[in-house]
Amino acid sequence: MSQIPPIFKREFLSYFRSPVAYVFLIVFLMASVGCAFFLGGFFNANIAGLESYFTFLPWLFIPFVAAAGMRLWSEEKRSGTIELLFTLPVTTLEAVLGKFLAAWAFLCLAVLLSFPMALTVAYLGSPDWGVIGSSYLGSMLMAGAFLGICSLTSAFTKNQVISFVISVFVCFLLVLLGWSVFTDFLGGYLALPAWLVDVVSNFSFKTHFEAFAKGIIDPKDVMFFLSLAGFCLCLNVLALER
Amino acid sequence: MIEVKGLVKNYGALRAVDGVSFTVKRGDILGFLGPNGAGKSTTMKVITGFLRPTAGVALVGGHDVTAEPVAVKRLVGYLPENAPAYPEMTVEEFLGFVAETRGFRTAAQKQPRVERVIGLCHLEPVRRQSIETLSKGYKQRVGFAQALLHDPPVLVLDEPTDGLDPNQKYEVRNLIKQMAAEKTVILSTHILEEVEAICTRMIIISRGRVVVDDTPEGLRARHGGARLDEVFRTLTQTDQ
Image (cartoon, rainbow over all chains, first blue to last red; front, side, top):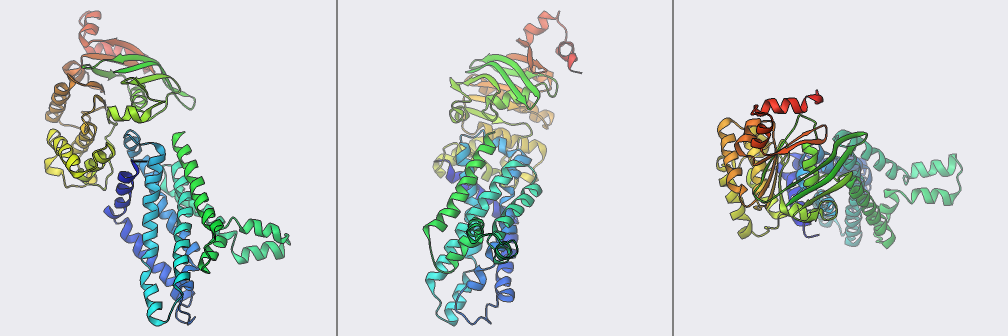
C-alpha cells in the first residue's frame, strides 16, 4: 500500500494541470447552487438549512461523477500510459486505490466548495449543524459509491464516451429505484407488494442518502455506500488484471 | 539475468508469441529484430511484467514475472513503444512522479536522480515544458530518461531510437554502449545498422518464433558474408 501516495498525488494534481478541474468545479457549483435557488426555493422555503441544496445532489452526481470518473482508466488505456504505470513497481490494487481516492478527494472538494451556502444560512438564521454535517458526510460517501461504478466502467474500455454513457445509465438506474415517483408507480400502478418495493428502493442511492439529509447517520447506510464502492473496486482490479 | 523459456502469448485466437526461449547475461546487448507484428513488443511486455504469458516462464534476476511481478518491475527500466507519458505533466513533474514510485520519496533522494537523467538525456531545455508540447525526439528521450531513472540492472527498450534524428540516434547508442558493461540490455529495432553498431547478440523473431539467435558477426559468417538486411529478408520473407 506504500505506493498509493505518489499515484494519488499525480492523479489529483492532474485535474488541476489541465482545465478539467476549473471547468468541472465552476459548472458543478453553478448547477448545484442553481438547483438549490431556482428549483429548491432556497430563500422562499424560509428555513435555515441546506436541504434544498442536498436534495438535488443524487441527480446532479449522475453526469458529474461520470464525467470525473470516465477518464480514470480509459485515458490511461488510450494514451498507452497504462503500460508505463503497470511496469512501475506498483500492484494493481495500489494503482486502483490511488486513482480512485484521488478522484474521490476531488469530488469531495467539489461538494465542500458549497460552504458559502452554509455560511449564508448561518448568517441568516441558526441552522442545525448536525444535519448539515451529516448531509455533507452522506454526499461524500455517495460520491464514492458513484465513483466506484464509474471507475469500473472506465476500466472496461479505452473509449471515454462509452465509459461515460454506461456510467450515467447505471447510476441513473440506481437513483431512479428510490425516486418516490418510481416507487409509487411500482406500488400503485403495478400493485407490487410493499416489501418488494422496499427491497427495490433499498438498492437506490437516493434512499440511503435521504437518511443522511435528515441528519441520521445509520451504519447500514454508511456500509451501503462503502461496500458498493469496495465491490466495484474489487471488480475493477479483476478487470485490469484480465 | 533474463531467462525466457517456452514463452507463449495468445491474444484471443491469435498467437502472437509461440514458444520463444532465450537467455541474456549481464553485459549483453541483445538486439531483437523481426518484421512488424512478429511478436517483439509482446515478448518485451511479458518480460517487463505488463502482460501475463499464456504459457511458459520468464525470469528476471531469478524472479518469475507471473509470481513476483513487483520484484521484476523494480529491476527493470522499460521504455515502451512510442514512449507514453502523462501529457499534462512537465518533464520535471513526470520524472519526479516516476522517482517517487521507484522509492525516492524525499526531495533529497529524488532531486539528484531526476537531475542525473535530465543531464544524460539532454532534457535541460525542456524541463519545465509540458510533455504534450514536446517534439517526437524529446518525447522519446523523456521515455528513455524515465527508464534510466533508478539505474536499473536490466533495460528493456522498445525501439529506443525511433523518432530521433541521426545525431540523437548516435548519442543514444553511445549511451547504451557505455552503460552496457554492468547492465543487461534488450532492445528492439527495425534498423539493422543499429544492431551491427551496438548489439553483442541478436535474435530474429518471425511469426512468434525465434529463427536466429547469434552474434551479428556469426550470422553474417554463416550466410557467406552476406549483408545483414539480405539475411534478414531471407529468414523472414515467409511473413509477407
